[in-house]
Length: 409
Image 1 (tube, one colour):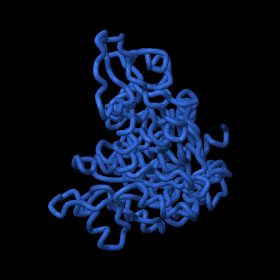
Image 2 (cartoon, rainbow, N blue to C red):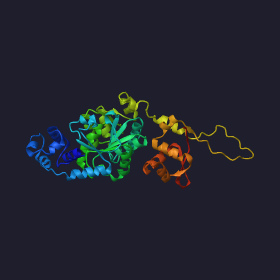
Image 3 (cartoon, rainbow, N blue to C red):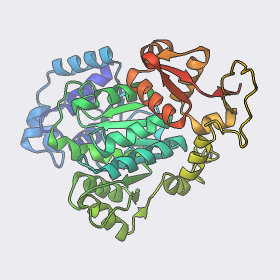
Image 4 (cartoon, rainbow, N blue to C red):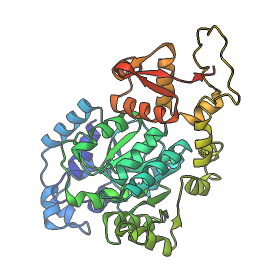
């Protein structure tokens, strides 16, 4: 913890930027040695202006102590660029982040088929649908989805990944305890539990326009490739794509209508050589040989296959109606279709399977399902909606839900 204090001190100096911090650490060997550096020492380092040197001469550590206290209280981990588990993908960057704040699960990014998904905040319905579906298919296929958390493409891609029962990482342009936009709070909290939140900024740091360009290089840096879903020719999404190209990452794009302003950027990228993507498999196939343990045997169902399996859940009416006997017997309820273990993982997410098991003994309300499964309410509601669409769950009087399928053991 004492060593981390100096990393926090260095990276929070006034006017400090990642490239300057890297030069300071390279010159001194560690932030602790830099803490005891003199003005003449700092003047020997190329690229440090007077404002940065003035900040480095401020030896106060009260703010660093407060930040470490906030991290301990919030369950935020810190990773320095000198740690053994620091991703090599980031270490290759000339402007690598010197210190990262992380919350949630841990991932070995160098062993992950991580795919960045970016796009416009003010995207169209087409863009939202594409981001959600591809995010779901990538996650279900074993990839790790990486994005921001803004409204629009970013949020839809992350939501799709979570619905697919997969893992997601969100890189924020503010502190991990700050919710921006406010509407992202539930999604951000879900990712903190099921995936990972990452930021270069300490707790309580508010979002600033200048943070996004800095943040975007981490999204592309952690990823094998970056997918642009919808964007204008000049946009923040294109800046992320520029980072990806500079970092020698693969570039993918979703083609769109020639009449849509929001597809000008993605269509242009395809003309420049980006891989055209219409489904998650278009990306997964590029990396399956490199990550066989992660991606092999986890090919997502095609839309037609998925529809066929979903429709198979509905009871099929008899071809020839049976004539009623003179004395009508007490009718038995329709036999529930039985879903094999193999089909269960193809048709349902982990959340959906948990809800189906909870409903196996009888009908329950959404609140009762939240209490019984400990799944956040927004995820329960999302899973219930999809299960109703699939015909696996029905809603009865009093908004109580019943299971309409039988899960094989």
